[in-house]
Each structure stands twice: as structure tokens, then as C-alpha cells.
Length: 484
Image 1 (spheres, rainbow, N blue to C red):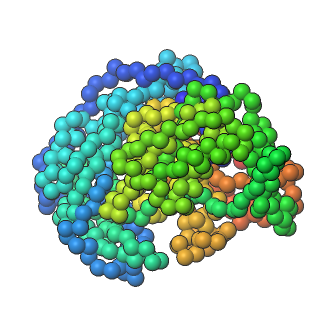
Image 2: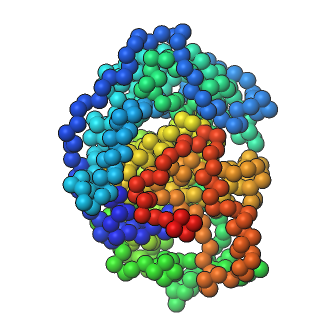
Image 3: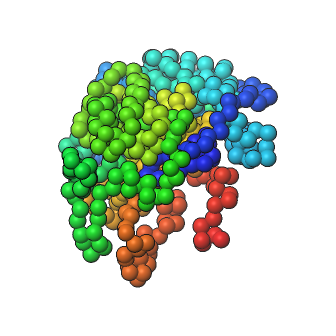
């Protein structure tokens, strides 16, 4: 991808490039997509979209039917490619990464992606006409022709998708969710891959608060206030200079000329970024804040912490990069979260060659449509040459345990699980990683015991709602020791 396949550095959820080949997309001489909706839409002939009821949508959390007139906004129908289109896309993406191909690094624009790999215009119009006939409004088709956004009510969702939407209470939080698997007219099945946004369980920020530091005003020395020692050794805070030293970041890797888009659903106090850069001796460089709709302001201190962290540390690792914080408001009636709206905006408008998302949502909670949504979006990003870096979190499978269990867990007790946002073949997933003063201060026998407890290949088992995928061509040259 633009910022990843040239000279690049990929650490701690941030990718910066020292040199970047960014060729404009070219139109490949390809025939217009063929129409796949071949029969009239009949309300009594439907297909069920399985794997799309949230795990928390169960009897003990149910507080009754959501009022029929209750708005549900920012839902999406996920449009799917034909088998021929999918094969053509995979072939193109292989050629984009082949230095011997004339299409090497010939990235597509979002519009070109939609024209070549989206449904036929007549099919898109047929789906829009059906949505309108069900009373849904504010229909929007994205540039990549993978999504149709729409608004409606609980009653319209029940009538159109044959699934009741109920009020839920989970650990003191109020939610809504569909209680049955959604159905769509059979005539639309060749084009519609799923319904995204029938519940409002949100992606969670992956930040974990550890502690604070102090800076000596006269000497400039930084002293962590959360240094501590346990059986594994002494742990220290890390600043940008430490980070560069630990990961051998070349001094030429400054991010000059590279844009990094940050996914957010809250605004920030830009003075925080200025103070961060001043404290650590970085040259002044304000991020660009892009509002995708209304300004939500600062939603909460926890949300702002995640947005601050991503913005500040992208600039710490790549001090000369153009950091672009994309902010989308989330309201209670939204089925699709502001995090997802920001990600869509970045990919569908080609905001930057690198994007960073530090939110997680477990595959089981995303369901079939949610997992397919991210796989499809990140695949479009890859075809556009966008490197997508996603936080995998620090707790591993424990993060996918029920909320009452996972706050302090370091080991999963409810089975294996991973974030569907980070587990597609088209993104780079980065998790928390301790760094010690020696290569390892842990006895070999303890390391072996830890590996047995968390076998590396366990995450590749088939999970409910998981989208199976072949290994991408860009991993062909990468072999683990077990495969060597």
C-alpha cells in the first residue's frame, strides 16, 4: 500500500513512511458490471441473513419492544460483488504488489473502485427503490459502491427485515438490538450481503490508563510516575526518543510528505497536542481536524484520551507527517457508530495513505454482516493503496469476555475471541507489547508455559461470525518459523 510497501516503519499502531510511491489510479479497461437482480421483488419470497443477532440480545437483558416510531439512524445495506468481480479484484491487488507488473502501485480512486467492482447501477437503483418502498429515507451510496446508508424507524425495520428491535439493559447501559435474524427479499440476495447497524453496541477504545509523568522545568528530564517493579522486572514510561531508540527508527523516517488519518468519534483540545510536542521537544505541527458532519465536541475524558493518544503518538513517531483527525458524531439512535463513519469517510474519500484505528469490537458481537463490513472496507482501502493499522488491544482473548469479566482479566475465561476490526487479511493489527532492558528477563521455562497457554495459531480457528479468508498474496513471502 502507499505508505506501507515503500520504506516503512510499523510500530505501536502507527505506520510512517520514509519514501512513498503514490501513483494515481488508472482505469482498467473493464466492461461495466452485469446486472444480477433478475427477478421481481416479492415480499413473500425471502432469504435469512444468519449470524446477525448480537450475543447480548437475549432474554435476561430484554426490556421489551422498542416503540415503532423510535428512529434508528445511519443503518447500512452492505453490497457484495459477484464471484467474477471478486476474482478480478484479487488479481488486480496481486498485480498492484508485483514489481514486474505494469499495474504495480497503480492504486484505484474510490470512484474507480465503485465503477469496476460495485454492483451495476440498475441493481443499486433497485435496492434503493426497495428501501424507499419500505419507508426508509436519507439514502446515500458511497463512492466505492459497497454501502447504502439509510434512516428509518423500529417499525420499518420490523416490517422490512422481519426482525423486532427491542430495548436492552446490559451492565447498566441501555441499548437496542434486533432479536431475530434479518430477512431480505430473495431477489436482492445476489447483491445484498448484509444489514449493518440493527443494534447500537459500540466499538470500544483500546486505550489503557497506566499512570503519569513529571518533567523537570530546568533540566527537561522526564520522570515516569508509574515506574514499578514486579517479578518480571522494573517497568518505565517511554517517550518519543525512547521509542525511536528501542525500535531503531532511522532519523530519516520523519513522515515528511505522508498523511496519517486518525479514526475518531470525539473532538480534542488541540492544545493537548501542542503541549505534548513541546514537552518532548518536537517541532510545532498542529493536526488537521476534519469534521464528518456535526462537531460532537469532547464526548468524554476517556474518549478524548484515545483521540489524543493516537494523534500525539502518530506525530511522535512521524514528527513531520500530516496528521488528520477525522471526527464523526455518534448519537444514541445511530446503528452505525461514529468510529465506523469516520473509517468509511477516510477510505471513501482517500484522505491519507495511512490510517490508524484504535477501537475494537469482537467478532462474535459484530456478527456476519459486521465482520464482512470491515473486511470489505479494508479491502477497498488496500486497493486504493491505504495502509490500515488497527489496534489489537492488550488483553488478547480476555477482551472478548463479557464486560463484567474483562475489566481486569489477563487471561480469557470464556473462550477464544479477537476483534473483528483487526482480524481481516487487509489490515495491519498491532497489540500492546512490553519492552525490557534485556532481550528477555523471563526464564525460558516460563516463556514456554505462556506460549502453551496462548498458542499463536489459536486465533485462526473458525469463530462464530468470523469471515474465513485465504492468505493474501502480499503475505506469500512471509513465513513463520513453523512454516519455514
